[in-house]
Image (cartoon, rainbow, N blue to C red; front, side, top):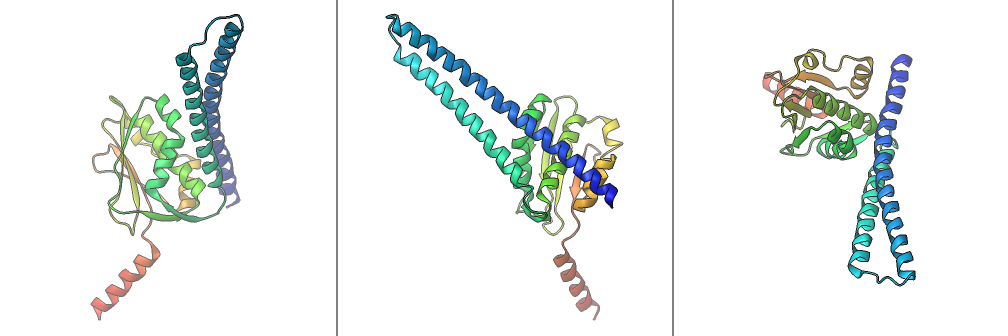
Length: 234
């Protein structure tokens, strides 16, 4: 148990560090663009002091560019703040679609770097699970990263959801896939530790071009099934 806890802690730190590094890189890029435009404003100011006329259109253009970068940095900071708060509770109820969408948004820069197109099909009804939100986000990212790495050709990843709200599942499929990836899905000690902690299992799809994250049937539904079976047998 202590060994698994150490693996979880180490993997959690790596995940947090990677997402934070990607987010701060985006913020740094936004600040660099702002700094560049501030320098341009300073040049225009110096030219105005020497008697050169200022162009209102140019000033407005620079102002808009700065404002766009401020909004960009603010969006990234909001994502990073939300991500940090996923550590607040040991377990909580989470909507799988919303969690997947958040992870896709949080890791959008890393996904773009792999030149992969990700398409998401919403579930027919909300799928709720009770898990540690931070490690749930971690596992979803590991699944997205695995799917992106397995995709070949046009490199498309399709994400969909199971239809049984009592036994939630998330499915990742690719148009064309690397066989070597599908032959060794989530076999690392980090994968096994997170899946055991979240009580998640992995299953390949029928076409062998994708896989699913599967949660066990909710306890309350198991109890209802058992009651139904008792009545039927009586």
